[in-house]
Length: 257
Image (tube, rainbow, N blue to C red; front, side, top):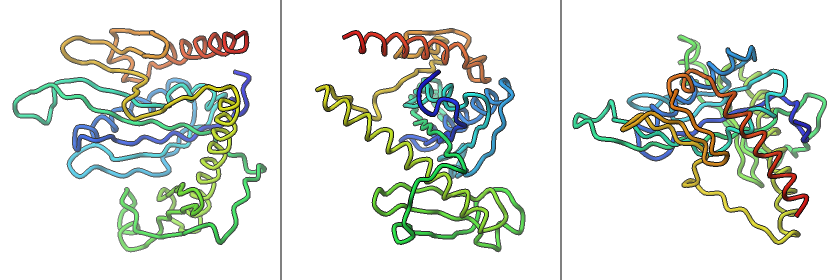
């Protein structure tokens, strides 16, 4: 892991896909999977933002994960995660497929500048929807910051202070802008080389099958295991190591070509 930002801390965002309660439940399963991964590897984690689903699960969540090479390890998780199972919410016990999108960006360091002009920001406040007791219900302490030129946004409701939430949201926004700068640079290089990469919601990186058989398979590396529950309990390191080997081999092939 010697690429730029590999030694940075990470921001990991989880988005439930289409499918209503099924997708929201899968998003919460993914959230718990990463929380257990963090615990297994003695990283620290802070839930910056979390939006509950209407019936179950979550619509999205944003985690700040700190630890040695946190971004370098977790960047392997970027993409669409697909779940196939018998639905616990279906009276007919039908098989359902659900999707969750995971985004991972390096957490910008305090001494690293990403310049944002004040007039480029839209700042909104709202009442926290998460835990916090009476304070969360009566005070509009949660903050959403939108970067108007790019449309990128970040929100935070984990702190009691509106000012602290604003500072946290701005830091998250700067991290996302940094990732956008990295992506734009890579796209320009690929365009000069004459190659294009298409990213779409249907291009899942990993499938988790609970029915009619038990299997977790990474579609990039080919690594798979039937120990599904262990994976959902945070045992992700074999998948991450397989990705790093695959990525390194792929990189050497492209350079040689």
